[in-house]
Amino acid sequence: KAGVTQTPRYLIKTRGQQVTLSCSPISGHRSVSWYQQTPGQGLQFLFEYFSETQRNKGNFPGRFSGRQFSNSRSEMNVSTLELGDSALYLCASSLGEGTFEQYFGPGTRLTVT
Amino acid sequence: GQNIDQPTEMTATEGAIVQINCTYQTSGFNGLFWYQQHAGEAPTFLSYNVLDGLEEKGRFSSFLSRSKGYSYLLLKELQMKDSASYLCAVMDSNYQLIWGAGTKLIIKP
Image 1 (cartoon, rainbow over the protein chains, first blue to last red):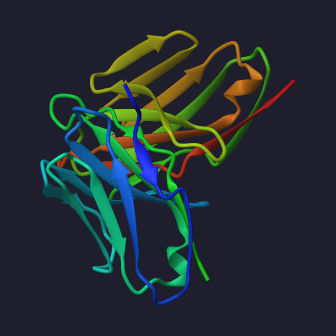
Image 2 (cartoon, helix red, strand yellow; image 1 turned 45 degrees about the vertical axis):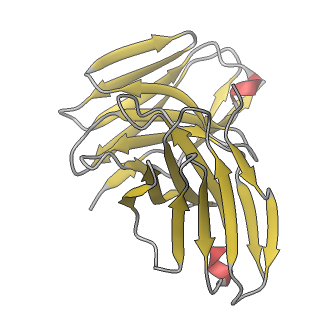
């Protein structure tokens, strides 16, 4: 079974720009969660989508948004990028019901200059 | 607020045993997870505890005490490849994972 894939793997953007990251979950998984990881901060939860609906949301500003499509693929958008948005963005998929084990993708390394 | 505490860094010797502790204070509890993350890679699932007690899986074991808000991950017969960060995460009442900052484990020969 193919694992979680994320595109692109690396991205360099300028302050003020916007960016869209993509995540394809494991086949059959209906839940996709997004995390921001920075050194010393650990994993910070952004949001979770299940069957195209946002089921949970972390404490991030409205510049961070996401969506999920009918095939469970998910996208995350960050508008008006700030230097502090530089981080590794990870998505994780799970079945979403009955079992909560999450499988992570390789991440997208975003650098904002 | 919700809080997960684990040591920042630990050092152990190849072949030895190490215990990584995790304490938590969360709004509700729906299970505790341990993940391993090698540098530059994504986290990978190690264990899940929802009931008190010890879960053993090969060289790795995980323990949970819900009344104490405490868990530990026990690694036996340490190998150099076990050098990684170990992340503790608790699923709260909203089924949201709250993550600790991770423990960097350094294995010395």
